[in-house]
Length: 443
Ligand SMILES: Nc1ncnc2c1ncn2[C@@H]1O[C@H](COP(=O)(O)O)[C@@H](OP(=O)(O)O)[C@H]1O
Ligand SMILES: [Mg+2]
Image 1 (cartoon, rainbow, N blue to C red):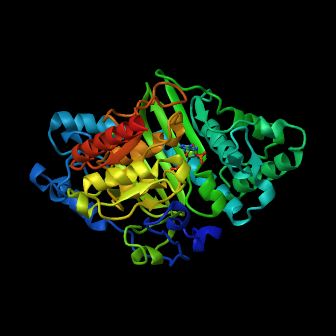
Image 2: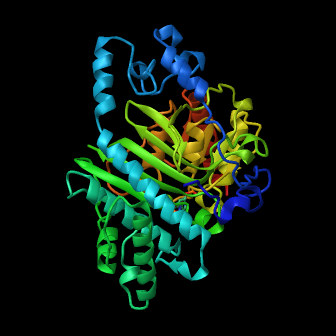
Image 3: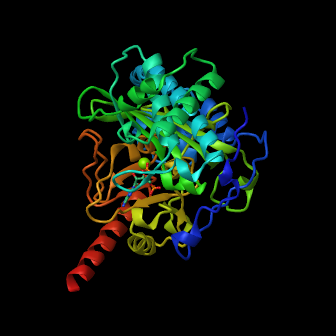
């Protein structure tokens, strides 16, 4: 089945509401059967047999995951000595089953979301206690992921930390929505054909409520944002289905389905990506790199973060929603760093995917004081970037800690870039934060 561009196809995803100076991201109808990008990189990777021929060397990229991951081929096999061959062999086989299950779950959920986004009705939007919009697609996506995990994992008692719960759906007056939701989930399952099942409304409610786990430092926990970027989804813009697996507090795999992200780089607005197919799946596993494929099926291509070392050639991503990140602060950071390009504002962890394949160099996220980041908003995106050779930290340069339960305990903000740019980015962040606190102190 070919990916279709949903009502977002002609939508504008940037500047106007985001503020002056940001770059608009327009999506256009897809042109089919374009050759996959990054093939030369795969070839390099396969022909490299010595450290000197490491593709990362050619890209002037310091491998963020340490030397043992350099000179690995597209299948994650290392050629850097016997010990690392053994290490890579176990890295490449570990979590393989879970990764296949995660891809299946996220792809199925993406299909449901695409169906809903095409036919979205204002009445699908409910109001949660935090007033953020929730659609039937959030619930349907979470139910589908939960069902796939239950059907496919050998341990049926899996732990799932997810954004939604069935509270609103169980209230009086939600009956019609629950009926529609159940039909949507069943229709998606039956179109896929893998499972010969028909769920009742109670089954759907129970599947959603599997996501009530609190996570934590021990054992395995799946982490799900069924629709990350709900506002983008409702606007017809970017959103993502983000699924990750934590093992002993560490993210060991992540899958990002981005149904509206063009397969070609969004760096050159108005150029190649306007002809690209839409709908990308990013897949990352610890020690095995990050791959991208089309959501409707194509062979995976290994992706890498940009190797740009000079800020004046760099561009940065931030939230489309001004309320999610302080744009005066990010603009001051970019200025101090010497970034010339205006911000690229898009919704959801699609930003992490775009950064992982080198569409831009930097991600800046600085929520207002008091906001607590949730793990499902960053777990999958973080490993997608780190396995592509990038670095994700808080504003003080500490790695993000996913072992504390539902929330990330953060120092101020989240930043991501390649290892070469990170030291100067951190200095710019510290300078801008100091300047901001001094100016608040003077008031
Ligand atoms: N005031 C706020 N500050 C920072 N993040 C916020 C926020 N309100 C909501 N968010 C989070 O920002 C996410 C969207 O990310 P982005 O800003 O990168 O598009 C939302 O995910 P959901 O859409 O899943 O609720 C939500 O978790
Ligand atoms: Mg989210």
